[in-house]
Length: 232
Ligand SMILES: *Cc1c(COP(=O)(O)O)cnc(C)c1O
Image (cartoon, rainbow, N blue to C red):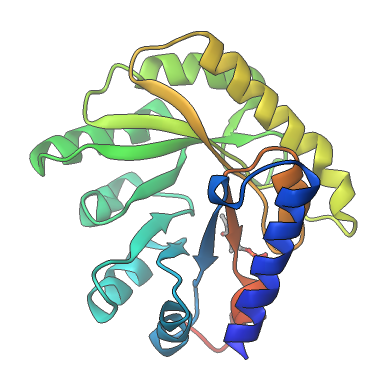
């Protein structure tokens, strides 16, 4: 059943690429496996999926040693500074950097472990109170501050769009994030590239791809609904 879910998602990604004149290779599918048991992750791995996303440090820490070592793990959820040390050298990318304080902790811990951490700056495009992320107007200034850290590599932007019934309602959010990434790329800041745009989830990833997403984070569409009462 998971195999079918994955192929359905793959087909929709391909269709969205076709509609917008983009190549499939430009879009990375992140299988968001939070709350799901490793048996389910393994099933998706066996279908060829190698990129997984988790939103909690503790869950990542538990799952990484149980899964094959060629998986690229993405931390997509809010990161507390006291947890940075547990994952800084284990993840392929941190999607949720939204403050200079968090960045300076990542810098410190990455220096200790002698690694360079690829990160995205999380932008709260829709300015929702309930969400983490830097506001759209403040993003460029934050990026210029974080760019000085030599153990951090800023590779792009991430947003969590509002929950909406009709994915078309989020098209503007995605196009605004794309525009911001073009504006920031134009500043030619040292140590900053804008090659990654992480946007789009189960409900709206096709629209996100049409608007330029290079990474889509799909959980429910692959693994089914999450049951938060049962797990943890
Ligand atoms: C859970 C989560 C997702 C996946 O959400 P679905 O709607 O299940 O696809 C994507 N991004 C982030 C940051 C998440 O926490």
